[in-house]
Image (cartoon, rainbow, N blue to C red; front, side, top):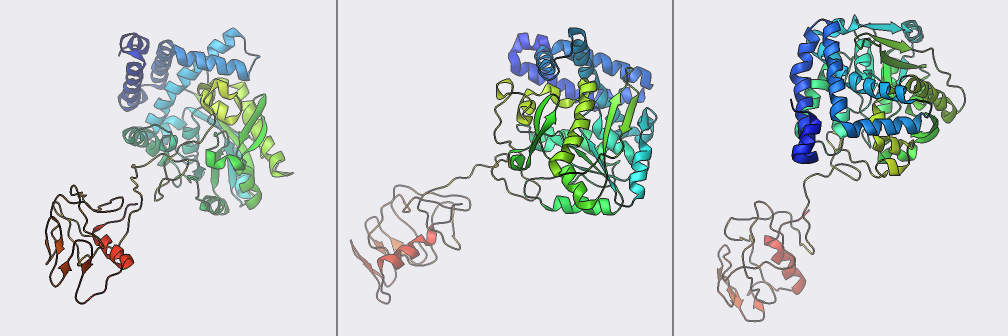
Length: 460
């Protein structure tokens, strides 16, 4: 495999991106499953080597990580900063092996490498009969942590969108790829599909409340940058030494149902193969929503500060700017976040654009329109105040749209009507240069215009 840095020198940034994409796809599809077959000590060691190789080949990503780490935690010295950057790349590479173990061998091989601490807090909370809420973040192998709780005896449902479904600029093939190699293996280990809070789906809270009333576990990652449609509901809380805009849904749900809230994080040990899943005691929900949510945010912030290399968003300046942790100059300017429409919904404001819509002015609409490849047919005799001369025939597969009039080259053919270059003659109709009259019908300009639209279809 070619080094990404070499690809940049030969073919430019686009070739470098293509090389990284191809390498990443090959790693997830072919290499990671092989590493999952090997003894854990060897498989995760090789995955760590790949992380080191990626770090050397992506100087821009290294620089972005270093800049963000310095801005958010000024206490890190140079050695700690280099170690955090190295661990970020290694952990990202090792996560693919975690998912491959779940995908091909079930939860047991991975479960043997994970130690759960605080499981008694979760069991005690569930014994009260109101369910339990695990408050987490995009920290470590968080998706694998949620999926492993199921085989450990806890019925788990996650509230959250799969990342590949709403990342702007991702192709349909890429979304399909991540659905197969990432989402499906994780989803199979959970009690039910994710409750995905797309804009406008207000029933998600009711479904989550029903899950909790059934005595099950709901997981929520609270560090997600809010979408444009969600920013009105975001609150500002202390986070990582600054202030972040986060959604307090975890507290709203807890106060609605009475379910206890506990923080949950899975961190990787220094050998990169063993992990620890830590579940805290219940977080106090006393006070208003902002006060209680600040306690949850403080728990997440403490975990990230202690293990910064585990947090996914350290590598995304744009997401940090959306959260309010970085000024816009260090990332993209906060603006409308493009997401695809939820299943069954049409694209709308703030969503990814769909097929282009063509509009035309002053189109007269009718219930039905009959179109033919070569000629325009009309169900009735059309009377018009003047003879209409038209330069050419406009045909479309289903709909014929025109600004004001329908144009034809020389002759318009109609059922039971004969047309001539200068006048329209029809059965039992006398054509005149200026006015078309009929023996048994009185025409008016407005009625004639309505019937003239018989061959004009609607344009949406």
